[in-house]
Length: 475
Image 1: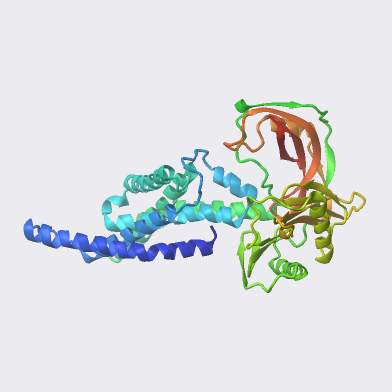
Image 2 (image 1 turned 45 degrees about the vertical axis):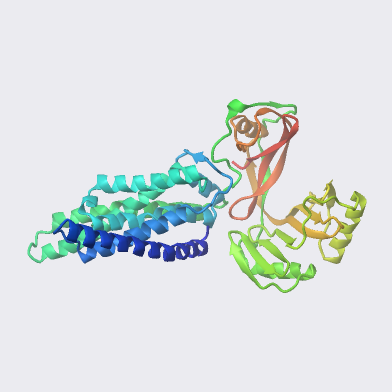
């Protein structure tokens, strides 16, 4: 969820929340004036300020509930994550704008609660009351998401939301002490103790801000990026037994690191995407959006994606549908169609080999030229077919990277020990059983700064089916 999406969703919630708040305020007014004042002869009055702040907190809570009850994780019913700070590990490993926005937004989202509650009732100027109210509010939201399947119950969300509420409380108390202190100063010149008492409320906001600044400074000072393939938490090894049928060396080595020199260059990505779309004879695009690393070009009957982090691209004709259809073209015919299409649309298949030829797609693997020490070109190209043999989708995951320098890497045996400790994907739908590793080789994967880093690729079987995992090789 990027800033644009967040703002759009907030505006979607504000109008209905305001209408509902007006209805609630009208009902409360009727109860106050008709029942309390007239029938029960009540004499307590409610100040205009409290009415205004009461309306604001009702609107805020309705918007908050609307934002958090949106179905962000379809198909993740009754899913929980009790690993504290796992979102920070994932955000550090992937270092995407989206990941950090999600953490920061979860904090900022609850800051108004910590400001508005003390304005409604002085009881919430006490730490225990504001902490309890904030925690119970976010707990209610997390439980609601869990029971309705509209989100994941995450311990990190409880922490972030509660932290946001406490930051809001600290900002309120600092402002309150500053204002009341100014008034007192007019009649009392000895204000040192009062000044100290208000400054302490800035400790939490400043500390949190400093931590985030420190994270981003550290990341920008390091030479290489982080590796997204690192696991947030290990697999449950009680579900698996692992054996190797191949010799695994204990010798450390040296391997080259490469880089995609145009990583995150938006203007370059747009210009290259335009060239490819012209080669594909696609119509003029009507506009484009940037979502994370993808620039998405939209045109009649289809879309085109350009990944600015590594230069790969994807194309899809939205009017074609290959599902539940039997192909009428045989494998040889599909191969010829793909070759002819590549030649006529300037898609290079140099150093490629046929990797697979399945029912509705054909894959060409791009083999790296080991004689070229200054550049590595690798990856794969997949052509997808309709039932009448028309190519309607292309995945062009070809990576061209320039040599940077050699680095020291761990031994295959050290990487294997990490596999034995569960450093691989362990999704709930993955069956437990016996893993047999029959191949260990050096492969490559992008880090978050566009460097093409060496990794150890372990291939084998899990209960007879294909299985693989990758371990970071650089020390």
